[in-house]
Image (tube, rainbow, N blue to C red; front, side, top):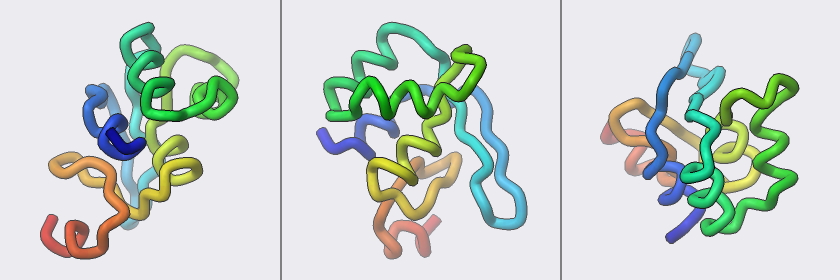
Length: 89
């Protein structure tokens, strides 16, 4: 499973997009999500970076865009690095 595939298996609980830019894509901070991310190859440091200062949730957008090569996200299709998928969303 690729990092993007793993991110797309995690339930999104909140997101915000503004003027075509993804501001955040939030998932719950729980052991299942952490295990999924670690198994996909994210480091504890990368996951910690995505939790921000309050450590109450995980910003999947940080992981996707900074560490997994994503260039697009939609609520219906998830994260992708494929322009073709982006055009079809």
